[in-house]
View (cartoon, rainbow, N blue to C red):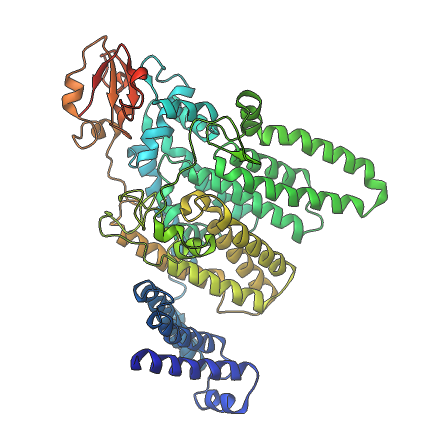
Amino acid sequence: MLTPLIGFIIGFILLELCFGMYVNRIVSSFFFNIYQVKDNFFYILGLTLISISLMIGMAGYLSYVTAYQLKTVRILLGVIGFLFLTFGFLQSFNIIKNLKKYFNPFSYLISTKLILSVLAITILFSIFLISFFDSNYGGDAFMYHLPFAARIWNIITPEEYSFEYYTEHRFLGFPLFANWLQGLFWKLFQKPEATNLVSYLSLLTIISYLKLYLKIPFYMASLSLLAIPMVHMHAARSYIDLPGNIAVSILILTTYCLYINKNSLKSKNLLIIFISATIAANTKFQLIPVVFIVLCFVLFKIKVIFLENKKNFPKLFRSVTLCLLASLIVFFTPIKNTVIYSNPFYPVEIKVAEFVLNNKETPPDFMHENIRKLSPYLRWGRSILEIDVFDDRRPWPWTLGMDFISWDEEKFGLGGYFGSYVIFNFLLFIYLCWKNYSLEAKVASSVMALMTVITPLFPQSYELRYYMYWMIVFVSLNSFLTCQLVQKSSQKVINPKNITLIATFFVMTFIIKTKFFFTIPEFASFNKQIMREDIVDQNILRSINNGDNVCIVNKAPHTFLYSSHFYSPNKYSVKAEFNIDLNEEECKGRKILKN
């Protein structure tokens, strides 16, 4: 009891001193004047974080939160606070300025911005090599995305490979735009590895958007995004979470621009909104509600702009009509599903006023009881801050789906944003809004508030890969506001270069902790992968003869890799099934192969 109590008392005293400095109390001002740090924002911020770190230990002792879960947060707050404290001292005693003078004679030899740009290009090129030459890892790529891409472009026909019963209905109902693009690249380059390029090109798309549209420096746009583990990992894989979320991020950021610029209602902006909304809504079901909400704000802004002048009413009418027509394309998938299957989210079960729509599967329900009992906001908060989310059974701290453990375990799906990077961006955002509370900052605050209120309420929101747009937009807004601050004030510490240096620290930490797997290519081709015994059972392959009709059971997610397309000149037909006991009829007339 004594240790947490002492920590709480010390933390409270430090917090009181910081607050006193803010309101110009005599005692606090005297204390800060002694150490020559009066009005030093970084010193006060560092001291505040350390005091909070000391105080919340009492919450663990009183069992409001488990001490183990608090440990990570307290360490992060303490370390970040200490760094701010150190920087504040160095700034107060002009040590930083003196160091700049000392190194100034050598500044002409090398530029920090140039180094950051070269580093960004190097990492992006290395990730390109992964996307083009390395095969996939991860269940969803082989379970859905590659099979769907192959079916759409007739690369592998239904006669050669038939999906599992439930997977077939997912193919019929799920949004397939990203899979269509994956199949296009597979067809063009004649290699399944090329399906990775969809995610990689989506990353280049948002970097280009931030550079050309929001005028954020290339090195800042690149490295600040690559510091997000989920973005970095998905950039060279055939999952479709990144392309969909980048489309939503561009939609949100362009809508943000509509609200900060009165002259932004131009054809170019509306075209970007239309294209990004269409891609997002036709890539993942989870993103359709997000797209709908954002488009409501777009429509409202269009209405406000046109109603400012009564003469614009005919234009408003035409614009609304055009928007309604465009929505037929944007929401093509749910409209098609409603017409054909009487369920916009077919094959997933949807209830409307106790009436169950046509479906083939219920929504996922594998949440651990400790996660289930938390409110959506606490679940999501624990995940973004990465409180007790890591598991030694994973090969790296972060994985594509934060998986490698059973679906029903507590840590499954949690994490992926780098908790300390989230905290850093939160503190930076507060500082940027406080320092320059302009229209840009006010609208950015509203955007972040709305996203933070709404996102945790979506299904499986704690599985961060489904809703990466929150962190992508957060980092992008911070980058934009940093550039705005530099333009409008004489601020020299908070600038694109320094913020990117901090982001680079997180990038390098991620690369090292994941043992370079997501950054440096292994040149492990698809052909090498299907030779691995742990992925493809060679005994089952040897038992299949030319012309056979087989039903391969319980080999998900790798059943697709048994297709004869990959073992030319053999020709045989494969039917995949999860469980023969549940779907015996599906395998009738076929030779059944299983463990």
